[in-house]
Image (cartoon, rainbow, N blue to C red; front, side):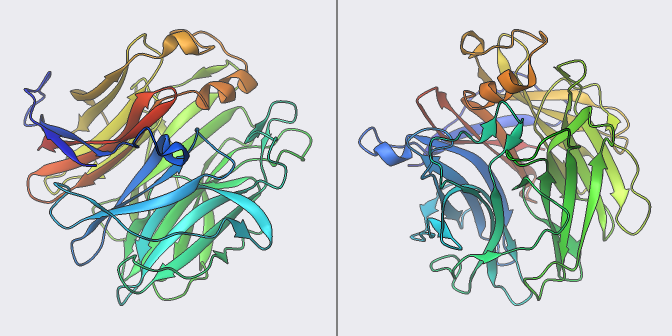
Length: 389
């Protein structure tokens, strides 16, 4: 499943250079249950093993979609699929396994956090175009004491005061063994009226499976702005976070530029600031020399891209770096190069996209690993690129 190619860099900024690309997972034509592989995340355990978890299904957002986990012990040069399989029910309800992220407890127990969607009405789409809400969901966690070979049953996380919940991005270390997981809260399909979107952080102490606190990192009380798909990275100090948001303005029916937040979790959380970078999902990473990388998906242009950007002043300004991937799919979508688009039609477009969802990991050896999904509308897999820093 793993391939390697060496390419000359199409663009270079300062020290940044793409030096290799490859495919982590490509479903064989005979495997009809895994034609769509997408929504990948990256995690490095304390023993150095790199893990990725992603969703697979016959189609994107299939009613019986499953999470699979791969691991690498050689800095992402080769990958092995773990044999783990997870239950397709939760509290007696049939579910789809939508997206997942990994974390690690003090002592080395591996944790898989996941979003599960209620599929008791299999004909119902993930997004309801009438109420503009999403399917009922569960946030859950499963534990493994053997490096991901076997897993416990789902354990449901309580989210009082938050509905329409779905995980976003990977976990983040907060120092002293603690970690946080990001999720967003919107409205369920059966809730009527407006509902402000909230980008949230759930904190754990590294010992218990019960969250010790949950807070909102970004929201617009008026309900016009959606701070979608936040991606977190540790800052320079314990409990400092870097956060990127795909920011959509429902009033103007357009995406705004990617927004960026740098915050001390023990202080007042400021509002996210626009970066001027046109794009959607964006994954940040703070390098040892103080530079901040941002891996950004941009779809408004006729040729969409996944591109690195770099800031040398703490996120105050950004310069473009190398393009990791280029893709054209505009002919299939409602939106054309930044045109206004109805909110329900935009959600329909999301189900058609066949590239994106970047993950970024500083390998600590002068290079970074980039992960994303890409392919054709009916078949796509997980790809990677390595960048010299």
